[in-house]
Image (cartoon, rainbow, N blue to C red; front, side, top):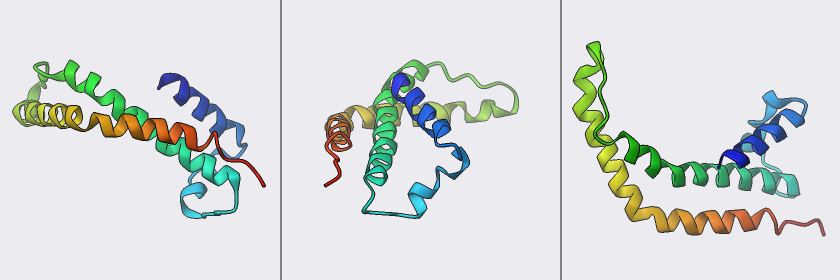
Length: 112
């Protein structure tokens, strides 16, 4: 996940006009191979972060201790973390399969 994030950031900077990266999501060009690669990379990066979320939620369970005026949210955040962890563990097989499919999709794109 970390390596793919750095590669994606490198590609964004390498574009030259990195502030126009949002154009891929708005101005669709279905005939472009790079469009398909861009969409697959964005989707795959999202799936990688979802696959990493159980590690974060497992680490946070039982350790939510906000201080000051935010302390009233401790129980609510703890319940949310537990719910997220439980549901992610149930649906992780779907995200693993989706990650494999997405990583293969942009490798298979080729110009005619």
